[in-house]
Amino acid sequence: MLDQLGGVFWLCVAVFAAYEGWKTDIGTVTVPGPGFLPFWTGVLLAIISLALIISTIVKKEMQDKLTNPWKGLNWGKTIAVSVSLIIYSLLFTRLGYIVTTFGLTFFAVGVMDRGHVLRRGITALAIAVASYLVFNTFLDARLPKGIFGF
Image 1 (cartoon, helix red, strand yellow):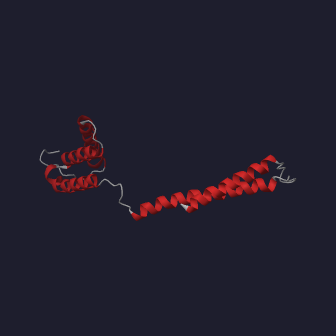
Image 2 (cartoon, helix red, strand yellow):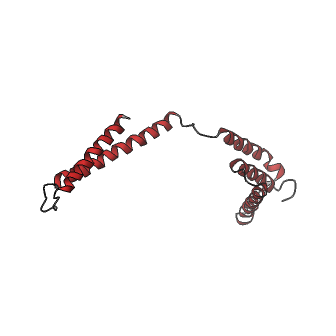
Image 3 (cartoon, rainbow, N blue to C red):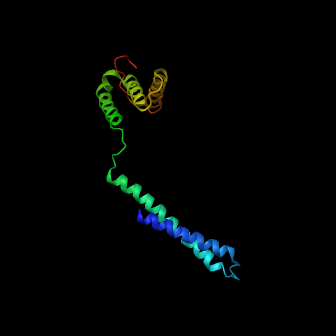
């Protein structure tokens, strides 16, 4: 907090110096006027002050994240999806690829987005069928057919 206040103080000094240098004749690089040095010193000091202010803000945010990296996480969703993956792996060979993938996708989409049930069903079916076509047809992978024969 003190670094931020110091940065704001020096930023004010920098703006004042640059403004006063601007009011007088700055001149050019080859023929500098009396305001050349105060103006460019003010600009440089403003850049350094802004870097100090920004770095203290970023440092504070990073420090908050480092002290409690689990803050703000939704553990209910994480646990629900993890349990659904365990159930998926247990039922995968019994029910087959399409049925279990549909169920997992339907559940996961429902956990992440409580949208309309029909939309979740269509999304889950499209993902299950499309991934089945990719793995079974194009990659010629052996997927369990399950109780329904597909």
